[in-house]
Image (cartoon, rainbow, N blue to C red; front, side):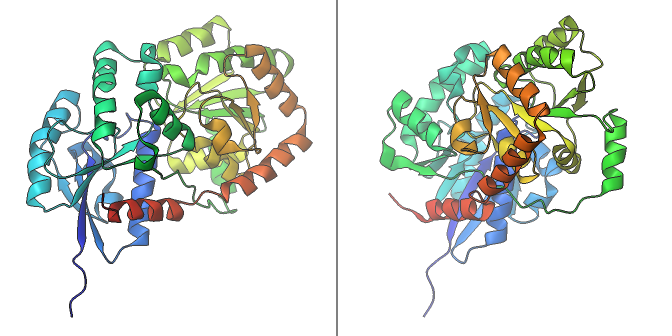
Length: 381
């Protein structure tokens, strides 16, 4: 007797341009890595990627059947066209039973059924934060994509409820596949940490870290305004921004200059994952004032390293952080200043938050997320 035939599932990653899609990249890459670790006796996964993805993530493409599309990833227009032409043809030729469109939209032309990952509905909730062309396109295509999908994968219950309320998506069509967090381990290179801190003049200084690209919804400017008040009393403290340059960067720069904080706000730019790991471990706390998050993976990353978290009480963040963080209204400058200042002065409270954070992250595992996704791949409607 022969076993059941293996099911082929394609994963559309043409949209994933490394370094430009923020947390969506982290979630997708780590979930795929966990899926590879999990393995499957009945599902073959084929990745369809752009040329930039294949160069940036060789460790991922080496673990799956991978097909590189004839687009670099630089042009959104060409990516969209390729999804409705090249991908539609190729997934049919490869005999995929399903294509997982992991970037929040599905192409207009498809030859096989699709599963869609919905990271968030921010373009519908806050259209003013997006450019005219990109915002209009997503507001047009996202609701149609959701309704055409066999299943919709959401990272949080918050996003699922938003899709139900805003688009009318049936609840039975939704599957929750949250972010996970890997155990970073207790050991680290103390000498390398000291060298890293020395590079940014942070040795023996308290500092607050915020790891985020400077997109408008990340709300850096409110944090800078609050930090200005904190720095008046705590002269040695520094605010550290890691992450690349986004569309709100000019506002962030002008806010820093307006408060005269050029020497006290340290901008590292995008740092290696190993460096971010060390900065989490050394930071006095992490501030996460984002106005909108579909999940908020950095919250778990900080907690897993024993870094106390102060987060905004918006969107999915209370759902993710639970009782293991301090929460502040994202636009309350005085509230942020008070929360940060109080935590700087209260090491006992920081210890309580760090311990609560360690407990919280045990509820999230990439292996469980990967198993949930694999279950979606096996479903039929």
